[in-house]
Image (cartoon, rainbow, N blue to C red; front, side, top):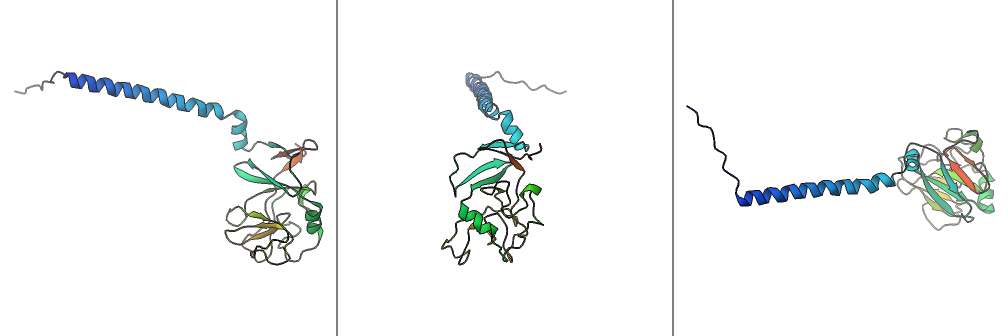
Length: 203
């Protein structure tokens, strides 16, 4: 003959503990909802579209000669450099040290396959990621005393991870780990001061 277990009546301490557990659970749920609302509200459709690769408009009117601005497109940093006349002249001079001076093996739109790798010579647009292992190069101006770029440096970019060097058009130098020039994303100009990254001129 079996005897059913008798559940003891809850004590006052049990009832109090249960009250506080339920209260804390409810408060936690409200807090979670409250935390989620600002996150969802801040994640606007335009930001979602950019994450998926939508075009990114950029006002370039305030970029000074020789200066660089960086924006994000498809989760990657994109450089926008306003070149000086000296920077442009350095690119137009033949450089036998470049691995792919005509950008025949590199990624860029057809309209950027030229000495400056750009639509407008004074504006350089490039993905700021080394084509070796994905590090981010740093700008090194002409005449820099940085021993990593050597004497008579005409200006460009140096990747500190494994020593790849690129000229002012993102073209890689010979005998460096990076296999190709820096990538040039599709882009066009909406007007004199508005650049659109991620969209071809024909779009």
